[in-house]
Image (cartoon, rainbow, N blue to C red; front, side, top):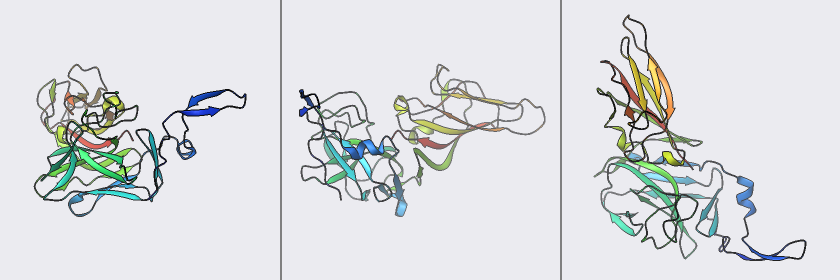
Length: 281
């Protein structure tokens, strides 16, 4: 496991070619060489309980507060049925016994011993400087965090007590999984089923991939808010004969609800299927 380069983000006096000395931070060449690439990660194991940062696939440059780590080996977190180390909504260390249905956000940190560790939380990351352990990178917003926790991915719990998680494959930034369908029947309503599948990260670039399916001579219109002004997608079948139209679309969801909204009333037989989600790391 790579060891962190401690203190990369702390200003030190540097003298330039002109002889002037100013306070500046050192930026690792490893980070500059990689640029902004998606983090390779997998979800696997029995019941898909193991989340792994795949440093063996490609070394992963990670800022963690003021410290830098080039993760060049795999780093995993595996859920158990009895006791799991997690972060609570305040960012403090906590224990979860059976997980909770829905989205879990994964965070990585460098301990005082220099060893990286992953912990999940139900609390979404933020880029706002809410406390001393939050900087520009997406991190846990809790004000009781004892150290930096940098966002690195997501898992979806489907059965709490077992536990079991959603089978998902990450390709680039996109997580692909089996379609989850909803059959909405009224206008300006949430689908009521996507909350457990959509991370609340649209404001940072998170996107959902859906298939819109019309009924005979029908129209399906969905959007990311109830006001019909964000990422509206429309599928329209204008014919009168029996048949359907299936149309793919990509749009942002609502970060407050983790949902998509039906903008127009849809006919019997219409549906919306969630098929993938675009991560932000």
